[in-house]
Length: 215
Image (cartoon, rainbow, N blue to C red):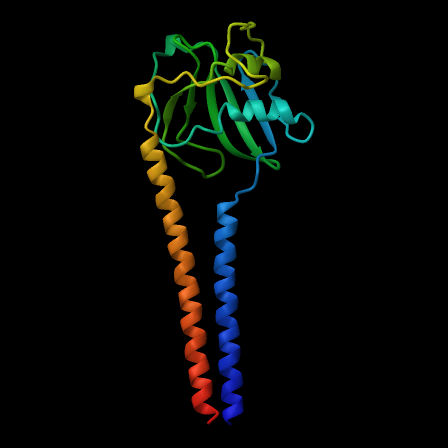
């Protein structure tokens, strides 16, 4: 009878350990989302969307992706006047064959390139709308991808998609982004620690019960 009870307790411990392991694995999966594979570009002056693939044109793909991959957090500027924006290009980031994120780029905007992150995202995704100062190389990067834009030899570049973002110093708030990153990291670490402590206490309790029942 004691051996049967001990076997059941050990089986319960194994299930508890498996559950904890799955929780830790879920955290690792959450921390590593799937990588984009394609970016598409749409515009009123394009007869059909342009597509740049990571596996066939890695350099150009990275250049186009770099124009939008940093558009996170709160916006940096207020909404410009519509007449000052110039032509709009919709850039959609794809993961496999599914649209993942969408952004509007305005390479010829008055005062420098602008980027807009719509609140409504592909699928059921939602975020907060925000306007951002774009990279000086936005026009040349889109032109390299096939957009009919004038050459901009005066843009600061370090190869395709290089250069710096045109952002006034008072428009940046790096402290807020760092605080958010640290908060998210702290939450993940606390969850992992709680899972490990729970597993340890569960196994210790099971071992104690087994010891008592087998005396």
